[in-house]
Length: 380
Image (cartoon, rainbow, N blue to C red; front, side):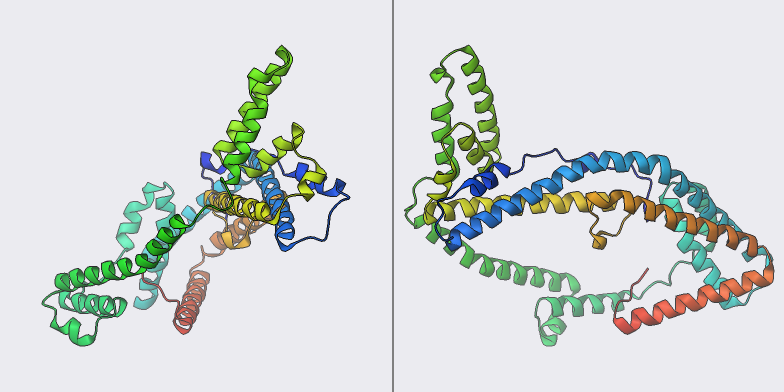
């Protein structure tokens, strides 16, 4: 559920231009032969790049609106829920002191109280620390020899050491050093094929000529150089275009360079159609790299958004749906508030409190059974 944390600055993203110029050229072309696999992939990558850039622009536009509405509409509800959670913790502490309970129920009550108070303390309610300390039962110390034996078994299993090798080790420290040496050997072995591939790639002749970004940049820079300006107005225009050219080249924006080609008349629809498969394959490698980079950026934006507001990243929030998401979060928090207020009223009665505690214990047992059955247990 959403939190009240202020979002990190890195969440914001700047708008970026789409690759619409190339798509317009493709639509205008009437000279195209049947598409080759390289051309089909080129068209697909251009469309994907435009979609990704559009998604980044949508995030840049939606995030300020979400934050403003979150602060004005949802944050006050979340603050109310924290206060009710604190009231519940205090009520449980009072019940522990005033209601007669079985020993096992009292132990569960303390465990439940600590589970509720821990996140509140982490969120800033340090006034609950004395209450938490009263109910927190430290674990019994674990025998050091048992810990060493478990450690040895785990390391042996991870690094492929036989039980005999593990038993022969003088101590866990010796085993750990042996495991580290084995890990280094594995890493060196894994890196050898990669190093050999890099050497082979470096030795290959560059049959396709200079990389497409550098070649395009040189061609455009020669055409746009201010020294070739016809007059002051043309010189100012060329200076602006050179700034765009340098910015696009700096970030490796192939589409931006191709769009500049179109804008200054060095590329038209027929020119797009005339691109050879060899050149298209070069472009495709660059476009694939850009798509991968933007995909990573989108993933970071989504992950940062979910972390900032306590949302489940598995739901893959979309910037176009943030208004609906906020409305749903409000409904959920309002339902939580109504339920908490009802619980606080009902738990004032000892018999109702005991029934509630039995229900909570039954739910906890069911969760533990499910975690054990699915192998998804945890230690806390």
